[in-house]
Each structure stands twice: as structure tokens, then as C-alpha cells.
Amino acid sequence: MSSAGDYVVVDRLAKTFNPGTRQQVEALATTSFSVKAGEFVSLLGPSGCGKSTLLMMIAGLDAPSQGTINVAGRAMTSPRAETGVMFQDPTLLPWKTAIANVLFPFEAMGRPVRPAADRAGALLDQVGLGGFHHHKPRQLSGGMRQRVAICRTLVFEPDLLLMDEPFSALDAITRDEMNLVLMKMWEEHHRTALFVTHSIREAVYLADRVLVMSRRPGRIIEDIRIPFARPRGLEIGETVEFNEICGHLRGKIQHTPH
Amino acid sequence: MNERLRPLLLPTAFGAGLLLLWQALVVVFGYPKVILPAPSDVLLALADNFAVIWRQTVPTVRDTLAGFALAAIFGVGLAALLSFSRLLRDAIYPLIVVIQLVPKIAWTPLFIVWVGIGWPSRLTIAAFIGFFPIFIAMMAGLESTDRSLVRLCRGLIATPWRTFWLVRLPASTPYLFAGLKIAITLAVVGVIVAEFISSSEGLGFLILQSAALLRTDIILAAITVLCIAGLACYGLVHAGELAVRKWHGE
Image (tube, rainbow over all chains, first blue to last red; front, side, top):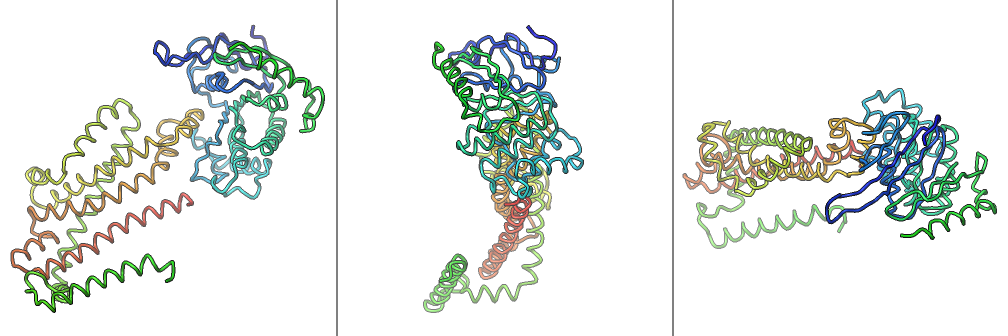
């Protein structure tokens, strides 16, 4: 089922928490799919369907119960340095400035920080934080913090971006804004990306392809291409085609058996 | 009253009032100076014996600070070590919590038997008493580190050492300073008790010696100096905390 050009190959992956105990939870049913290099894929599903678990396993931060994950031709057993992960929370270090937070991956990896300082500054400028390089996280709004987190994920030029509902804590207006920022950054840097969300519109707006997951235990019940050309503006959300796709996906999510 | 001066003025005024009342009671009822010297007598004793008291303050403060420093090194060191190994943590941490429940002062005579009657025993006792609050606070700080930050480090394939240095340690400094502040006051207690039991120098020794001579005025003068010295030590830790917080940009 995998073919040339597949960058992420998820093969018969399943996850059960606390197996053999009374708290046993089957989070993810046997799931297989693949993502091509340079493709932006949204993983869409209701809360608690195991989509975040799936993403964390691809990040190497959680171990599968069954099945294998291949990234760039190598089996995933532990986190890899070339993957950038964005979490639901910005997870910034509260005692570091915005730019120091963006540079944190270099410190954590033990790579020289100084040569990257210019790029970190440029990234912050690109997401509209030009005047906030030396602000601490608590001096920034929720949206600004997530922008810093985007820069931190991109600064070390990972080849794979894994994003776990990064904007779900933000209000609708800020969320639209963040989607625009993310699109702009992705179009410039063009990495393979997996984006987990429970927002249908967000999934469709961002992705080349949307995978829909069922309720727990999650499995993939739909896999569709999103045809809109890039760069995309927020106005594509007003088109009939966009809303038809959203309606189709909504139907899929609502009519899956529990 | 000025809102900014209030927290300073109010207790100062109240304390001064108490001292005046004390002075008045002693003068009016004519208590013997041996039992209850007036504040003015204490001040006089302090002025007259300043050289002696100062000479005894130096070893007390020195042993306190040295013992506190040892306590900090061992407390932070052991907590850091245990944060790296689940096995060591589960084996050692509960034991220390239990030992912690025993009154530490009770060990003092034992330390004197083991290390001798000089400054090494005073230092050991101060370090021993100060160790527990620092260790326990540091453990609490390290264990309360935001899990998502630790996961971020794991995703960035940071070594355990880098995770400790870059995230766990800075995240636990508020806890650490709470522990250090308790430890510095306890270190003074430890040194004074050790000086009571066996010593030929220090403010504890001076207090005990003055009690034998029924010089209550000198005892109170020594206690006054001890208060000031203790406050200064505490202030040192507090200044350290402010410096770290400033560095963290709060």
C-alpha cells in the first residue's frame, strides 16, 4: 500500500491504553494511511477519537500497541530530530523571551544558538511579532503565544510538521488569523504536514487532503482531496464548493456508528 | 497613612510601644535587673560588651552560612540525582520523608560524638537540619514541572541532563527558594543548639555562659544581635531570590 513518494507510512497501527486492566481503553482501532512528501493532511475527528494519540505516536512521543510507523523510510521508535511538533498549548518557557523561546530547540538539541538568531528574528517578523522579540510569554496574548510556537516549530527547519489542535484554545477570529499565518508560513517553507483538528472548516481550509476519523476507537472512515488552489485566502470559505465539502464531512462524522 | 509606608511603620510603631511599656513596667514596679532588665539595661549591656558579643557573633554566623551552603549543595544535589532515576527516587525519597519526621535536634549529641566538639559538629548539625526543607522543596519543584514542557524537550530529543538544566531546574526555583528560606532559619537554630551543648565560642555559648553568671542583660543583648544576624542571613537568601527572579524577568 505504500508507494514511492510516501513520506509518512502508518501501517496497521493500533493503540490500547492500560491493556489487561479494568481501565483498558481502545483509543485507536487498526489504522493505515500514508502521507506524500510535501503534502498537508488534516486529521479530522470528534473529541476523544484517538487522533491526538495517533499524532503523538507519529511524533515518537507515544508507543503503539500494534503496527508500525515509517517516516522518511525509517521505522519510528523514538522522537526524531527532523520532526517539529506543535501542541495544543503553546508550551513556551515562561522565563524566556519570545525570541529565546523560538531558539529553544537549538538549546535543547545542543546545537549552536547564535547562528540561528537572525532566522528566529525573521520568523517572528513574518508572523507579525516584529515588536515583540523580547516580550515574555505572559506579556503576549494567546494568539501571539501560538505564533511564537509556530516559529519555534519552524526555526530548525524540520521536514515533517505535526500539529495537535494548536488553535483549539483560541477564539474564532484569532483562529482564522492563525490559519492564515500558518498557511503563509507553510507555503513559504513547504514541509510535509499533519494537522489534527476537530474543526471541519479548519481542516478543509488548510489541507490538501482530509482524513476523517470515527468516534473511539478511532479509525479512518473518509479520505478526500481538497481541490482549492494555493495560496488560499479566507474567502474560499464562502464558496459553494467549500461548504459542500464541509457538509459532506459533517455527514460522515455524524453518521458513523459508535 | 501612606499606603507604601504602612507595612513598615505599623509594626515598628507597635514594637516601639511594647518596648516603652516594658521599660515603664520595670521602672514602676522595680523588678530586679537579674530577673527582667529594662530595654535600656539591655542596650547598655550591648554597648558595654559589644566587642565580646561581636567576637562571638562571627563564629555563629560563619557556621550558619557554611552549614546552610552544605545543606543547599546536598539538598539540591540529591533531589537532582533522584529526578534522573525513578528507581533511586522510589527507593530513597520515602525514607527521607520518614527521617524528616524525627526532630532533627535530637541527633545533635550523636553528631558531637561522631565529629567532635569543634566547629565541624556545629556545621554538620546546621547542614543536617537545613538539608531536609531544601531537599523536600526541590523535589516538589522538580516533580511539579509542567509535563508538557518535559514532553516538548522529549520531542526535541533533549538529553535528560539538558531537560534538567534548561527546564526542570528553572521551573523549580520558586519552590527551591521557599525551601532555602526555611533552611536558613533552621540552620541558625542548629548552630545555637550545638553551641549550647558543647562549644567554647559563639552566641549560644555566650548566652549559656551569661546565664550561669545571671547576666540576663547580656543574654538579651546577645539575642538582639542574634535576631539581627538571622535577619541578615534571611535577607541574603531573599536577595538571591530577587536576583534570580529578575534574571527570569519577573
